[in-house]
Length: 197
Image 1 (tube, rainbow, N blue to C red):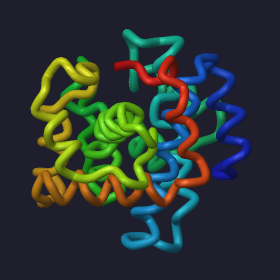
Image 2: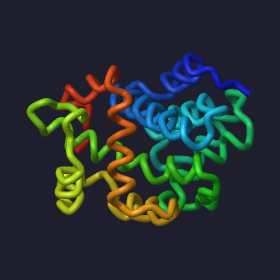
Image 3: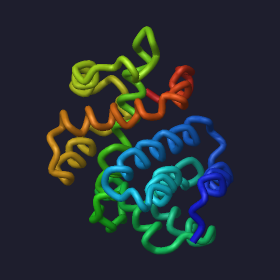
């Protein structure tokens, strides 16, 4: 099975031209690597690559999201464990998708995918345009404002916290911390045109 990050990035770019989708994949990948250090340190690359490719089909096949991904990932040499890890992040969101997050990696991807978008949108509204000085209370306030970053499903984020057995505040703070660990990549939030809010 192919796991190399650079190869996976090439595959992501093969099916996604929009900088937003590529950068979102990179952020989610970094967040997944952060959590892997705690929960599965011997498989950091696996977690990170699942995060990178979790929306592989979204740009070209939005109506078949996570359905088409199975085909694309198989064509590119990924095994069934990897494919399940990718597609189950859309459980309950995409019609016809029956694969449910079961393992800790899958549950974290499900819980943090939408949340990274919300946190990124909050961060770019700050003078610093950074997560480094972002406080939990700011994210909570915007979470309660449905029109802000309306594309980020609050229901999915709440469901993700429940599946993990974490309080919502804990999920938010830990995801902020995970995004802070990507400080060298946080310039991705500097261009407002790349955050779909």
